[in-house]
Image 1 (cartoon, one colour):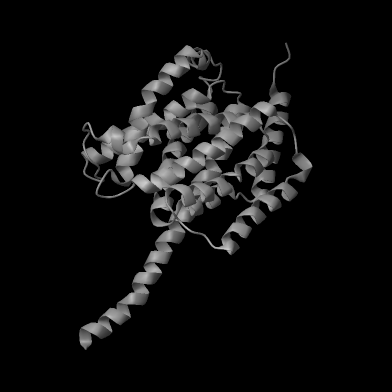
Image 2: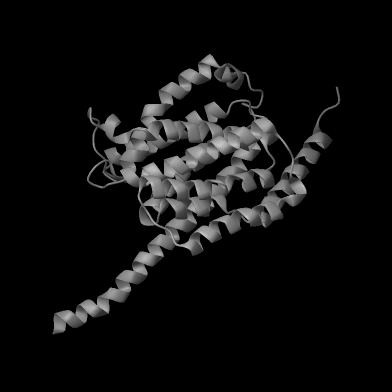
Length: 298
């Protein structure tokens, strides 16, 4: 009898802890997702950094270094490389780099409010892929809520419906890659296989070299090396901050998907508070005005 009473007493604590972990992982991901959009927007738009690919490579390199050093110091664990890992991981590396490149490119092409609206199409895509790939079932209430989010986003951004075909293409590709990446990440995070950290580490390892080769062939690397702000301490600080936030975003994405679902992760990532978007928009405008005032006359 005493053991049974102890078990009953322990059940609520366990349930509360589980819900708390889910909530904290979602909040962590939402915070990282919001701030990386702001920093990337500053790097790519305010400073006009010409190469989203190089920024993506910096984020991948940061992820590899942090996870490898953590593994060496026995802070985290993931399996050593063997010939079965590429098979276990496929097609995540392709989705990973597609998500990176399309996300960074779309950020530089569209205004923040419009970018936020179009990113919400990731939500129904994720729901659809979870049903097809993970065989999940959602109630009618959840489906209606998903489409209500999209409708609300269009209403909120009605004053900023600027058209940019290239930006639209990139952001819709980003929606597809993000949805597929979230669903396949959830599928492949089995602790008995690669685990959370193994998925992150090997994704970055497999795609950093091909991405670097693409940056050379497209001229992105040359444009990045010739960029005029490499001696600007503020730019370098924000570039490095973007690299760190890139790692934190990938880590928080995996955590949120692990403790919740791919759909929850997508909803948290796509739903940005409009007020924050407006605040950042005003900050950018003020910075541009300040730059024009301090710009020397030729």
